[in-house]
Image (cartoon, rainbow over all chains, first blue to last red; front, top):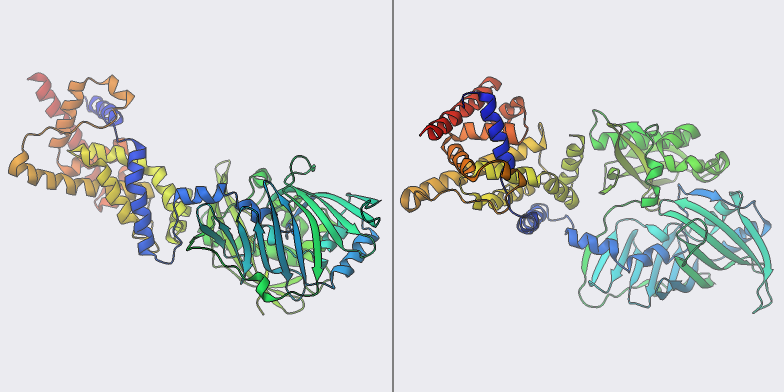
Length: 413
Length: 181
């Protein structure tokens, strides 16, 4: 053997042939130690492990937050089909302005639940929420964070945002969204039990929580919604995500209704950032988004969020759709009404600050980053919104798109 | 590379999932490198353990210069070198002559080489100076370019390439000598 190439080939084969310990065994030894070392080095980081995250993602109680509360329509919802404005809805908008709190009861898969909800003073957001299911799960909102107690692992999972089903108050804004939509069905009928006239609205949409379809029943006399059903698909097929059979309205309710006492000493674990799997395809076009080449994640996320809000301020719908692809299925009128808020005092007028980046996560497309934005509205109020930015590598090019809001906006001044 | 930048960025922000992803992404390659660099392969898991625990403690202040893969591979090489030295000191006292430990799971490629030849290569690799052995492993097994190795080792690229050539030549002479004897 005299040739250096021969010896290199032999070494390659030798190195390739070297056995290593079973990965499970190595994982058990290395990963917990590394995670522990990481958390000790940065004490404020929430404890985490694969098994804990798996528990979260498969938690039965997790469905409670997803289903418990009415208001699933969020900023960048995408409507599939909707209704022409009908008098019942417009009058309902006025009717619900009279009430700031409600109690709802119904069923979610495998159990019953009931929930108390109270809006903020402007009736745009759910400020206080507590929902309890028949299996011991409790979901609640407090000081802008969402909590979910799962009695199985005796753990409270939390997010520092008002997320999932707690997005918007079943109030004027929510119903206004319905009223502006097009193409859904409205049915008029009578409740045989009470003899009262009813209007039923059928609609479907895709929002940041994935596809949903709804039936909302209004009492014609009081104009108020009295029941609704929601499915996690667009055609109202299969078992509903939730079926609310009772809604009671209140001018206000005592604070004590929102007190939550968790038995024992549960662990608190921050919920991982994730997006609806059903929306992945909508985020996968190479024509959308902005290139991230040569930028840090922070810089790229800041740039695209800034550009998105600038498009909102400028009324540039084409750019908005390109940067935030979930908006593509909205027609111009819907975007102007719901996102741009054209002519409204609560429209966004100025970008005050973008960043710094917050929570991070991962989807099948790549990294996710939550980017906060401080914005000034036309009425001079200052709000904070958080946008999820999706990074992706498509056709060997790195880019990012805005997925949608993380939780609901918060008035800060 | 882009993904690694994201992962490091997330890791520095305390994202546990990012650390898990880095570990899962590079575990197998680093295990192979450790197995190739250690005289006693029973320590392969210890090398990976020590490298990742050390890496994890840098959360919030880790600065990525060059490739993450290269950085971790150099950490493995450093730790393996430490363990080899400790082992040599111990062997000098009372354990001299114990042959290298076989790995836990032999890969299918091993069938392509006779056990005898693998044993000779084990012994020959163990005879190489650390700096030559590391460069052979990092370049051949780790697929790290000489430029990256030179930067990480703070040597010139010519020195890195020379060590690689000297290492291969020494292996050749060791194996030729053994085969001829």
